[in-house]
Amino acid sequence: MAHFDTNHPAGSNFHTDPFGDSSDSRNKPFDGLDGIIQDDTTTLATTTSGIPALDPSSFLRGAGRTEAQSLIFNYRRTKSPTLPAIPSRQPTPSLSERNGPVFSDLSVPYKDEDSYSTRPPSVVGKSDDHLMHNAADMGRSDSYQDLEYAEPLDENSKLAADSASPFQKVLGMDMGKYPIDQRIEDKKRGIGRQKYPYVVWALTIIMVGVFINELVVNTRAQGTPISFKPVVNPMLGPSESALINLGARFPPCMKVVQGLPLTTQMACLNDTANPPDRLCSIEDVCGFGGFHGGEPDQWFRFITAIFLHAGFIHIILNMLAQLTISAQIEREMGSAGFFITYFAAGIFGNVLGGNFSLVGAPSIGASGAIFGTVAVTWVDLFAHWKYQYRPGRKLAIMTVELLFGIALGYIPYVDNFAHLGGLCMGLLVGTTLYPVISPTKRHKLIMWAFRLAAIPLAIVLFVVLIRNFYTSDPYAACSGCRYLSCIPTASNNHCQGTGFSTSNTTTGGSSI
Image 1: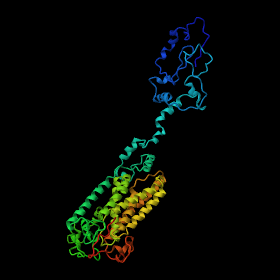
Image 2: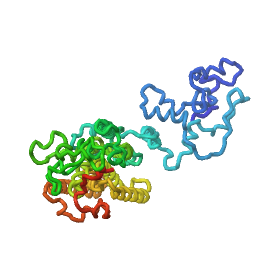
Image 3: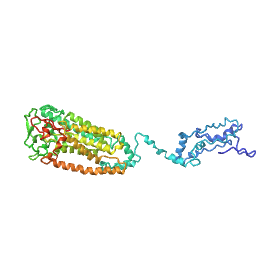
Image 4: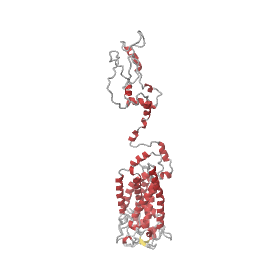
């Protein structure tokens, strides 16, 4: 700080007394300060010599200052941090308030010196370099964590994910460079790989269209969209013969079944009498051009049955589940992985039911496929246990829901094998394709071990059960398996036989 010097030689013109009578002489030394912003942080202390003292931050106003230096300057002017309390000090009187030179108040520091005087002892006497470094880091503070949604820190992460191959995307390997903290945060908030479930929407539209066609076919055959004669369809939909004709899973249309030769007669589509008075051969009811003089070979019924529904009750329940549970799984997995999981579960459910359900009862519905997507929620629960909200409570609720769904399979006209088969295949395929977050190498190794075991197991199950289906007696492979979908009573012949009857046709085995 410059001090007032009273020891100039007499007659010296070193400076003009600013406290003299002349107003010109009083104001002249401050002409150069007219352009300075006179706020609280830029007030300059002066000496009685009339020479303005330099503001320590004034050098930052030059054209060549760096961005960090600019941040320091603006920080000091607008948002100076709260400093420890210091003894209050009376402000320095202005020149107009003073009656004369005051030499006793020479200890008042510069305005900026107050800031330095309150620094911790560890930084007193140091340069502003550390302030510049801290100011440069201000833009990288943790304030982004307060935002509702933070974009990935590195834009290249998105580019790396977008440039991944289709195989990597299906297996969830396209997220390798995506910040794992961001993935965990997205997981907790339910944000998946895509915003809209396009496959679920497309499947729902197709299934509703197919159901409308079912009603049209039954109207042309019986005069009403809902079958009331010879018996009432409990699901409020078409007759059993109409469903078989449209592609239901019906083993006699797919292979030669013991006890149901091709000459077996059954109710035609237009029959309304009970017992039926209009009989047709199995080949005629199966449709699709018949068997061309050979054995039944309509294998595609493993697939077409997924799109058919037994009635209004059936399709409403399935579509509600599909548009909620299955839709969320597609958002999390992506359309490619979801498509594979959905149809693998649906087809395998029909394969398992074709092996061990009553061969004389048709089965239809997307329940097996939907149960496959439910199985993926179990993969998600155990793979991301510590990221789930109240995982123990969620496990209890999911267990109750699963037991309820399996219990429904014992209701007449419901095929529990479609549920169980879809659930089993959904677990295997979901484990392989679901994008699991692995924060540690140990977690990643465990997941890859499950995947390497699930892939061959899924293939083996498909091959073994399809081969067993085309044997003469699939029940021989597991004689007690039929009880997983049938409670033995006198009305169903204690779950024995084929379940086929020409005297009282019903819509049996519909999978919901």
